[in-house]
Length: 123
Image (tube, rainbow, N blue to C red; front, side, top):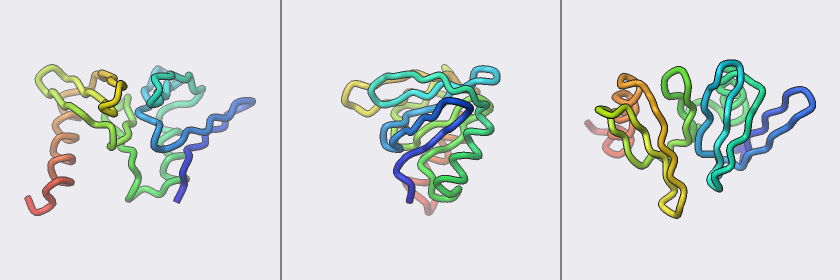
C-alpha cells in the first residue's frame, strides 16, 4: 500500500505522507493541500484530477480519503466535529491542529451517516 500521495504537474512535484495530509480544498482550477503541521500548499490541479490520483495511487475502496461535496477531499482520520446546522466540519489531530472547513448541509449529513456506519456497521 502507498505511504505517500504524489502529485506531479509541470515543473512541480508534491509528495505528501498520507498520515500527515489533512485535507485538500478546491479553489477554482487550483487546490490547496493542508498538512498536519499547518502548512497550506497551492497545487496547480483541479480537485477532480487529485481525486483520480488518489484512486490510482491508493485504490478506491480502502482509501483514508473521502470527497465531501464539490470542494473538499478530507482524510477521514482527522474528522473531529461535524456541525450540520452551522455547515462546519472541524478537522483535528487533538495535538494542536484544528482546521475548520465549510461544507454544504447535504455533504455533512452524508459524512455524518458514513462515520456513524463505520463505527456501528450493523445499523
